Amino acid sequence: MNYNESSRMPPKKEELALYCKLEQLFAFTDFEEPTPCIRFIGVRDEDFNEQSFTQGSDGVATFVVDVDASTSKAPESTEPSRGQSNPNSDLLQIDWNKFCETPEDCKTCTEASGLWYKITYNIDPRGSSSTYATFGATAGTTQSIQVLAISSLPGPTPAPFRPYTRRPDSALQRTYSLLAFEVGQGMCNLICSDVDGYIFDAGAGTPITKAKYVSGFMRHDLHDQIQRLPEAVEFFLSHGDQDHWRMLAWDDRLINKISIFVVPSGMKSIAFFDVKVKPRVRELSSHLPKWQLAPQTYLSVYRTRPPQKTSNNDGLIAVFERDGEKAILPGDCTYKEMRKDLDPGVSNLPSNVYKAVVVPHHGDKESSYDVPPSQANGIAFFSAGNHPTFNHPRPESEAAHKISGFSNHVNKIPAHIQKIVLL
Image (cartoon, rainbow, N blue to C red; front, side, top):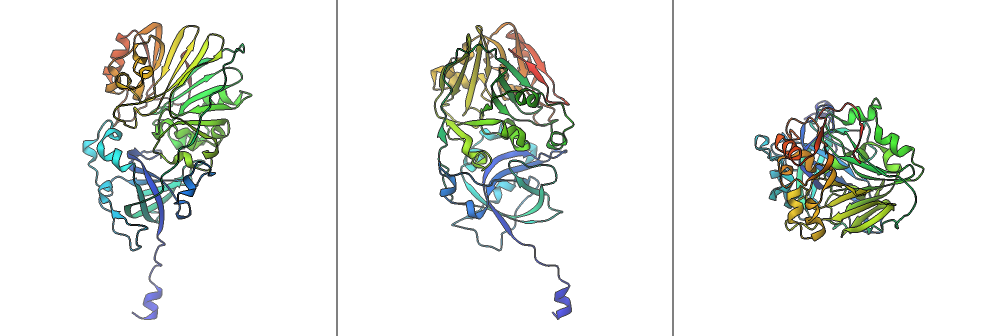
């Protein structure tokens, strides 16, 4: 090859790498037109160490990597993998015609989420995969990439977060309300007075997409409610699935209003080690006794103890009570899973009578079993969108809640994040 020929060759693209945990094996991109992807959350080389994930660290910069699900096999990287790693291309070989309704419960997902992966890639405007900062990401910051290799390797074990200490009982004359928000295929609730509040989940999904959200052309009742509160709010995460915290990733204003992020102990996602939230993160390892927010107003938060853990049943459940009327916020833990829980406080929850329920797991088929009875004029709020694959809520769940005496609230195509008063 002569000098003129070599000078015309395009420069070799720089190989980059992130060290990741599997976030979700069956995910969909946050773009205007969601496409199937395998979602990882990772850190740069300088943060891939035990010290970065200790309890006292200030946190790390985390990044989402959405690997195009149509990728059949990643080529081997020319750069040796750090540590003793093995190629794991099986993660990229998925039959999307055999989509599981609860894929996070399967053996493959459970085992894979406990490993670390090195994802080698280069920046490529034509690439079908993408990466972006986990928190504070706005439209235009997503980078298109070509994934070159994915390999498993040893990595640090994230330390537990500091334990959560609840506020003391209060006899202040405040009136608290329970609000649910139409956020599409996600979940979001708020218990608030005119002074303070508690957010339970802050997720969203189709038809509420990131592009619509960050455009600002959307009514946003959650913002309106919390911005007028003189005190900061506390945030409770039912479990680690992103459709229960995605709005935090889209919205710095929301993050800045929150004083404490409470997560279930043992959560596998490393997202909450991000420097934007880590100093404020606390965890619950056992359920909190009922505490008084105001006269005749109480809040309980339960830490489940499932006999067989899945990402859906291993988390937090909240019960709000005012003037003898109760409401339950179970996240994705179905009533049937509550019945089987090893904690008697959790297993007894479906036996209570409720004025309002936020239907677990967006109203999937499993949520149609063991539905608790309704108090007079009770409301069942289905926090589901119009995703054609999930197709929530299922008719069986709507029918079962109606039989139990609830009036169902279902809006699969919300155009705005609108509040619904439940209690």
